Image (cartoon, rainbow, N blue to C red):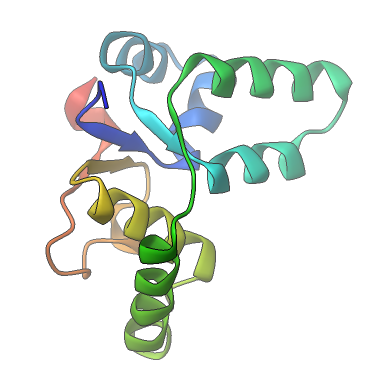
Length: 128
């Protein structure tokens, strides 16, 4: 593992929208990404050129797959925080992957993750 960060999908979207700060963060820190982020970028693509750009971005970053540990931890997080904090399953998968690899989760939406114990979370603008 090269990076100490895992980027949430929001950071990748900002990069694809030509946000220079997001571009600087991704190019400098080279964070890992979750398979969830790749799937969300595929789902959000509006056309083939957009899809190609999104996949090219993911291909340049280390991609972390789900493991049995991260999947079970995501389910535990979902059970614990879905009702109280509105945690979504895909966010739980990203968070559990970050926890499994001891990575800081960098996101545009810290409120989606800040309540999860032991998870280091930061807004990507703090690192830009």
